[in-house]
Length: 459
Image (cartoon, rainbow, N blue to C red; front, side, top):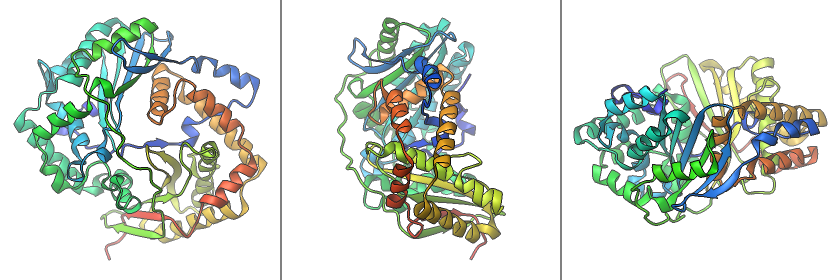
C-alpha cells in the first residue's frame, strides 16, 4: 500500500498543508457520558510515555488486534513559520523533493520495495513541524525500519529531478482553481488573518521565492532540523515496549543528534475582521472559506469550544450551518466549521459550497446563524445531541491502531501526553449549556468574519 504522498513525481498533485491540526469536532472529539461508554474507551487509553535508548520521547500503545505497526515521527519547531521569510517554502519543497530517491534506491526502486512488502510511508512539511509516517506489516518490520531510515536519513536530491519538481510545485501554487478549498484555506486565508506574523506566508511563501530555493537549502534544512534531538514519535501496533524502543532506534540509526530547534515563533491572536477577498474562477460553483474567533487549545474553555464548533458546523445534519443553509434554505451543497489548532494560534475555519448565484445569500444566511447562536445560545437538548454525536464519532474514528496512533500523534504535537484522551473525555463531559452560551457570546461575531471566495462571475 502506497500513501497518497508517494505518487510518481511526474504525476503528483501538490497537497497544500498549512501545518495546523484541523479538528472536525464530530470526528475526533468524544465524551464517555455513561459507565458503559467509559468501558468502551478503556482499550483506547492504555498509552505510555516512553524514551528510546537514543533518548527520543515517544507515546506507545500495544494493539495486537492486527499484525501491523504504525510509526509517526515529528520534528518540532521545523515548519515554514520557523524559517526566514524568503525560505518559508523549504519544508514543503523538501516534502516533495524526497521523491528523487532514498539511499541506494532510485524513486521507482524505492516505491517497488515498499509495494513488495505492503509498506506505506509519507512525509509532510507544515507551518509548525515536519513529520514522517509509516505503516507496515509486522512480519517485515526489519526491512521496514531499514527503508524508513533511508527515507528519513538518505534522500538523494538529483539536480535535474529537483528542478522539475520545483517548477511543478511553483506552477501548482499559482493554479488556485485546481483545488480552491485548499488554496483558499492554506494560502489566501493565512495572509489575511496573520498579517506581520510568521504564519502569514502559509506553508509555501510565494512562487517566486520557491523558485529561488536550492539543493543546498534542502540539505541545510535536513541538517538543522531533522535531527534526533529534535524528534518525538508515536508508535502503535503489534509489538512490545522493548520492540518499539529498538524499532525507533533502528529508524534513527546514523541520524545526527544535532540540537533541539528553538521555539522562535510568538503566540498570536488571528486578525479576524470584516474582510472579503475574492478570486475569480471560471466555474458554475463557488467555494467560500471563512474564519471565526475561538479560544486557544490550552485555554480552560478549549473543550467548550470543541462542543460549540460541533454545534455550529461539525459535519452533522443537525449542525446549524447544514440545518439552515442546506436543509431549510437550499443555498449550499455542503458546509462545515471546525477548529484549527496550531502551535501559536487557534481559530475556527469553515467552508460553504454553493452556486455562484447564491454566494451573497449564503454569506448573509451564515451571518444570521452566527448571530442567532451568539444571541440565543443552545438548549440542553442541543448539548445532549452534540455530546452523543461526538461520543459515537470518536468510537468510530479510533477503531484501529492506525487511527489511535494518528490521534495521539496529533495531540502530542499540541503538547499533550499519554493522558490526552482521558483529559479530553473528562473535559467534554463537563461542558454545560451555560459554558457554551457564554463562549458563544464571547467569541462569535457575525460582523467580524473573514471570507475568501473562489468562484463567481468575473467583475
